[in-house]
Image (cartoon, rainbow, N blue to C red; front, side, top):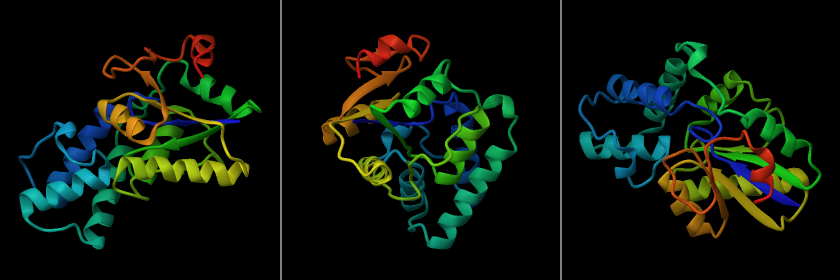
Length: 213
């Protein structure tokens, strides 16, 4: 059995823009930082927790306390919930593709995201994904992306009580290339931004994608 682990924003859901907008608002309204770097690739750890902690340290010269971290993530989720539901759309073909893997005896499915768990689940469910019972790891579990991905792998292994013959990761950004290279995982890129050997615009050609797995 192979395990297929999906990133979420930009990989399964068309939510990069709304997620960034709500994150920026949370930084300004909770951390009190108005002017800061919004090119996320410029941060050491491109996860919600990692970027927020670095902003707090870089611009406020203070670490994120537990209370501040909780307030920040609650504000972020609140901001997402206030947005029109029409902004939370699945990448074309993604729901059907994920469902086909869930139903396959040859594959296990999990999610690994740099987003906070509550916001990740909200985005997936609002976009129409049925994620009940599926393993998910997020920046609520770790700051470093690779650690989040390993947590997702571990949860999938425990859920299926299996050791997988191969780990395949679907991502959409340069940091996904770096993380999968560091872990030695196979990468399938989704969308126009990522540069990798295996890349698809979306999931509307599922047979072609499955042939690569």
